[in-house]
Image (tube, rainbow, N blue to C red; front, top):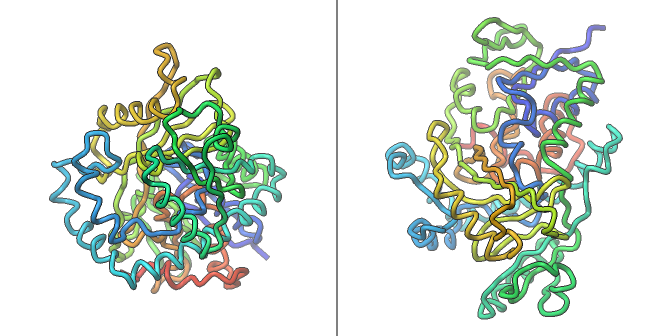
Length: 415
């Protein structure tokens, strides 16, 4: 019997995991992307599996702090003035998503995905003999203000209710965990079960090599439209029409226009994230570090030190703003004095996170064309949720659900 064919549109980390999962289920898989595998948002993420981030981005607390964060020149939130007219409808949906019932529902859905994230990654990597790419690193969330000690205690108690274990540390214990942190760090929450990957781009390369070794095909072309019919689905590119039995859209922030070609209109926004990568062998971090007050993350990758932050709602077309990189420089040098060395080599990068107003991904199939499926919109948690998203969407493809995760919150027509 002929193996069924599946096209995976998008060669980021979600698409790569989905391609491998579909191969495991016996499908003949073609990966399609306008760029090389792993060069989208997957290239520049922090490399940290942020399973403790179970709150949606839109909450009453976030809305109360949004204006001060935007007004602060070093703040973590940016909204370019020229983009405001285009973003207003999305912002209205984002504000509505802060209703208590919506936040509670979103938190429950995110917690389900994040709880299953690391086990899914372990299954994926074990299958391709790459388990060493997952590092049991632990994670430190730090505060500089001693006045916010109670805030840390309350946050730990809150996360404990959702099964996330942490330890409040300060003084000698904090110095033992992370000796090179600045002396102005007052206290931290240590998450001993947290994990990171060795290097996000290297990981994508390993996933892609395994995909090719198992007979997978890569087509480097931009997909302009999806054309479903009674026999399957065709991908329209600028030079060809590629026919398959099924297709799964994993195109991140570029998924919106593809869905519009099949009659689905979703409020997907390209949230721009900024990144610095330091070649600083003299600076040693033992764990990924998050700043509760400055709202950015530093991760010690195998090859470099990665600094990631800034939430900028600016779409796909605007060029990066130099002052966003300057804000990241400012913050990371306050926490790691060794980065003040003017001779440290550093590179700058900006990528696009696919973000929906309720902070939940789309993991579903088309309501009228069952041969078309979707896995995108994981916002800041694309790397974290990639493997579990792949398992869920391929289970929709096969008609078999191997997990207890409720897929309803991730429907494509929930808007």
